[in-house]
Image (cartoon, rainbow, N blue to C red; front, side, top):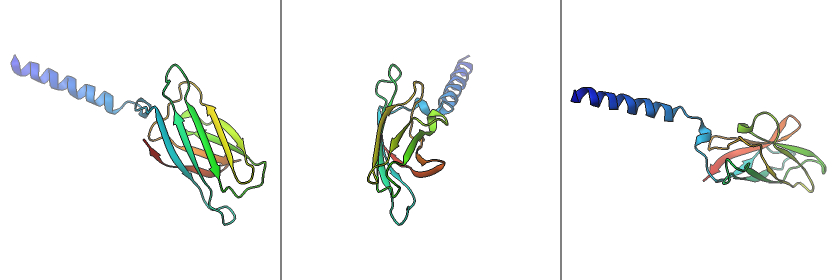
Length: 137
């Protein structure tokens, strides 16, 4: 009887551990994250940027993303779109380049959760000009 109880508990722990291991990465939420953005040289100039995510009000409030880019060697007025990998294929916002710089602060849709494996892409049309490097917790 004692052995069967131990075996039952071991099975239960194995099942619970398996469920936790297979849970989506979104369950590992961080209230705030920041990351550097980098991209390939454009006309001999290497672009750079930063992104900050705030999702401390989740799930009652949507998260906020703030993007700043600089040294983008593209014409003034260039429209850049920002996408978050865990928010689907639709851009979460756009920003307009002026004097090689642009910034965006916007909420992303409810239900979209950013975790440590999420990617941020800044695109000029279909070309990615900046992307996330490594999250800072």
